[in-house]
Each structure stands twice: as structure tokens, then as C-alpha cells.
Amino acid sequence: SAVISQKPSRDICQRGTSLTIQCQVDSQVTMMFWYRQQPGQSLTLIATANQGSEATYESGFVIDKFPISRPNLTFSTLTVSNMSPEDSSIYLCSAAEGAIAKNIQYFGAGTRLSVL
Amino acid sequence: AQKVTQAQTEISVVEKEDVTLDCVYETRDTTYYLFWYKQPPSGELVFLIRRNSFDEQNEISGRYSWNFQKSTSSFNFTITASQVVDSAVYFCALTTNAGGTSYGKLTFGQGTILTVHP
Image (cartoon, each protein chain N blue to C red):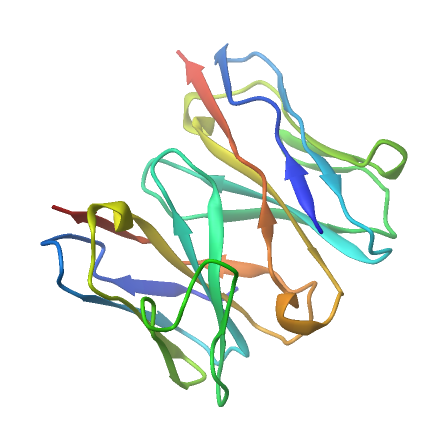
């Protein structure tokens, strides 16, 4: 199974600033995903990040607000831009080792973001 | 559209009790995969099990067992002789082979908070 490391683990940010979250996988993976988990809620997919192509965003999420990079098969970043208190959430990245739907997604420990 | 429903928001049991977490799903695809994840207080999601839509065999792993019934679109999870360390949020999730931009996307249920008291 893939091991996912996320940095930072938590942060407190001021309104209007941006934060970049890093996700490192210990092996090469085809598919990486970014999820948001608002307080007490379930996980919602923000976007799918495959190496060599633009990230694919889910309805309600836009690239200007959540730009994503995927420079290689082991790394991805998510930026939360121009933050507001509504962005306070846990952000999790996941990785699936293959390129087929049945593949297990392994998750990082998440980044707990608080926006003041 | 895919949907996963975990009707039990919170369950509280005393140690050594058995507990069942319910999961009901909806999908129009004939090939799909169901998952259970555990989210302890530390926050990471821990993979527990995957089932595909063609395999209705129940599965047991130690104190954990899963009951998959296509006829009722359910994939329930039972913990036998629960322990305090089982306290966590448990998520049921679904993905399908449908193509397009949703390929590989996990649709999660709302989660069930399980608290096991000593």
C-alpha cells in the first residue's frame, strides 16, 4: 500500500492569504485526488490530479480558488487561495496505484486549516 | 448519479458489545466497488475493505465482518466484541467504472461516529 505524507499537518491563516498543501507519495502513482472535509462532515472531492494533464475539478470547485500542481508521479500540491473562514476544513490527499476505478485509494493524515 | 447513505449518525456502545454500521448505496452502473474506511481522531483515513459488485460473498477479518447484499443495495459492517480502540468515524464509499471526469471518484457516505465506552 502507498504511504501518503501531507504537509503542513495544520495551520492557522489570516483571511485573504493563500496556503499551499503538499502531498508526497512513497511510490509512483497514476491517480491523485484532493478532498475537503468540513467540520463534522463527510469528504467531498475537490479535484483529480493526474500527472501530465490539467487537474479535473468537481462542480463547485474552480482552479482560481484551488490551483493544483502534479509535477511528477509522486507529488502534488493544492493551494487554497484568498482564504475566508468558510475554507476552514480538513484537506486530504489520496493516491491510487493504478489507473482503474477499483483501485484502493490511500489517504494522507490531512491538513487541518483554520482561517481567521 | 451515485449516492451513499449511512443513516446512523452516531452509535454508542459499551466494550464487548457487537455493533453493526449500515450502508446503503445507489448507482446505475453494473460494475462498482464498495469500500469502508476508518477515520480515528488523528484524522487519517484507514482503508478497511473493498468489494466489487460481482462478489457478494461476505467477508470476515478478525473481529470485523461485512455483509454485501445487492438485492437491498446494502454493504453493512459489523464489529464483534467492540473495543475502545474501535472508536472512530467510519465511512462507506462507492466508485464505479463509469468513464469521464468522474472516473475513480469516491463518493462517501456521511459517516457514522462510533464511540465504544470502557
